[in-house]
Each structure stands twice: as structure tokens, then as C-alpha cells.
Image (cartoon, rainbow, N blue to C red; front, top):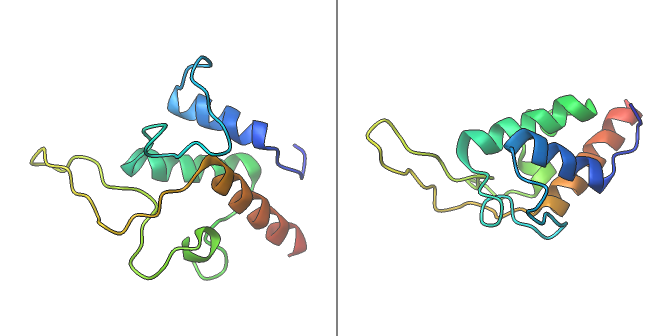
Length: 116
């Protein structure tokens, strides 16, 4: 596996992991939740799949995704999915991230991993 990550590789992983058809356009500016419907557990699993595929950690030494994705205090990457009562639990403070932002965060995390 190459040490360099390409945007095309990230898009291919998103398609494969989420089962998104090749007919649906995915670009650098596609929003993970709004445009691609990736939310809740699916979003968390996608983040883990990116980490595994590219051998990196977004959490870094501090164990938090905040720095990698520029999250403020009490801000989240994804809304929650349906809870046990069938009700959507939606944190109000969710940062909408694009495919490009996910790609850039992966590149930065990979650089950090290569330095260590």
C-alpha cells in the first residue's frame, strides 16, 4: 500500500463501505451526511474503515477526533441514528464535513503517522 493517499482512493472506499452506486456523483465537496446519507453508526464505521485502510489514527495521542476535524467543544461529526424508541436523537452541534475534509484529515493523520 502506498504511503500517499489519493482523493480517488477515499471516494472508492466511501462507495464500497456505504454501498453507493457508481452512478451517484461523489466529489470533494460532497457532504457526508446531507449528500451521501452517511450518519450515526455508519459515519463512525466509515471513520474506522478509513483508519484501517490507510493505517492511520484520526484520534492521535490525545484520543480525540476534535483536532483532526477541527471540532469545537461538544461538537460532533455525525447525527445519531434512531434510538430504541424509534426516535431520531440529533445532537444540535454537528459539523458538516465534506469528502474533501475527510481526505485532508486522512492525509494529515498519515503524515503524522509517518513522522513517528
